[in-house]
Image (cartoon, rainbow, N blue to C red):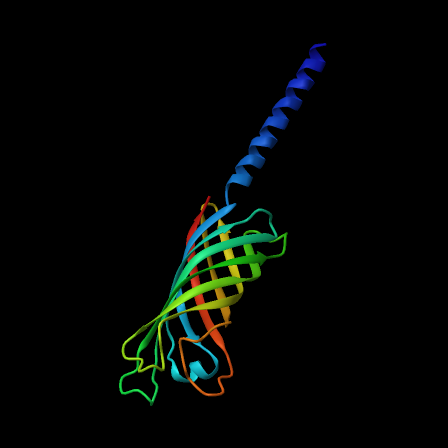
Length: 194
């Protein structure tokens, strides 16, 4: 009887310890909040007229499983335009948000490579004289991202590259036969895990 009671107590302690360890592991790292900073530039016809400029952002990442992540975030960028049709080229200041679904190998969590796709909406503010060639406007985007995240304890850091397919780039009249294009950026990330 005493032996069965001790075995039952040991089993209960083992289950409780394992449950609390799993709860602690589950709690740490399921939600990441991080800042992004880097450089970006337009591609296509608009890329021929714009210069590389700063890019920034703030992102909330939820990791419901080890291989699937969901991100929502704010991002912005600024690019100077050098258009020979204008005496003094404007700056294109972009502010917007996007949502991204990320996939990664399920067995890598401390160093996690990922790829993602999503949807975004940005407002491009043309600062300076656009002379009707550049007008402030909303544009829709499809972000495609790849990167590498480093996770340890309460910290997360990483590097990523994002190419945004611009569905609407009516803010710029860059050529009569615009070949489309997008917005490409490379950034570093640093944040906290909860």
